Image 1 (spheres, rainbow, N blue to C red):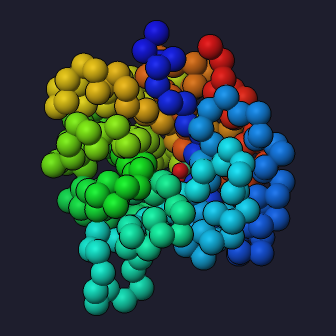
Image 2: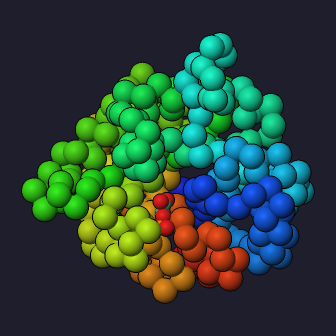
Amino acid sequence: MDKQNRKAIIAGNWKMNKTATEAAELIDALIPAVKDAGCEVVICVPFTDLVTAVAKTKGTNIHVGAENVHFEKSGAFTGEISADMLVDLGVEYVVIGHSERRQYFAETNETVNKRARAALAAGLKPIICVGESLDQREQGVTEELVRMQVKIALNGVTADELKNVVIAYEPIWAIGTGKTATSEQAQEVCEGIRAVIRKIYGARPARAVSILYGGSMNAKNAYELLAQPDIDGGLIGGASLKPVDFATIIAASNQE
Ligand code: PGA
């Protein structure tokens, strides 16, 4: 089975939650809860929590990610954080193009592409987010839209770099709403994403890339979503702040 050859990843996206002090407490609770995970466990945390997260998770099976990165190497970009700054801290992953960034911070497919390339060039593993709004789903353009998002995000990314890329399919209408895509809907889009990657890079790289689902994934629905052939893991918002729920989702990823 292809799926067994891919890395299963359960990544938490803390969003703008937890001070560094609170992060230390949450990580202390997470470490024992996820220590027997059969998948890669990642926590993507606010910039101000990164130092604490890297220090606390040292020697554990938890990997640390940021929630954004700027595409320039350095310079006059007040308030921004570069890929080299993240790498120097010991950060391994970075979320790119989350729909909240697209919606509130003028993120476009083109800036997602620039960030992904900068992240890859610095040795980070980008978790590139794509997904449609409710309007777009109702208009029947989900497939085309997500294909376009993936294609532009990966523009100029080499086959070798693709090995470090993770794609997260997150329907906007399912994020933080308690409304999850059905496992069939999620599988259909994730399968389509793999098909685009196959078209660009060929069958073998497409079989190897990890594709996550995100959007109200929780301890109850994770098992069914993660059982789908093209869903290799999850990007978890709300539930990643609750150690028991996060650990249950991690356990659900270990089903074959
Ligand atoms: P949610 O968020 O799990 O709270 O819906 C997912 C995400 O935004 O990554």
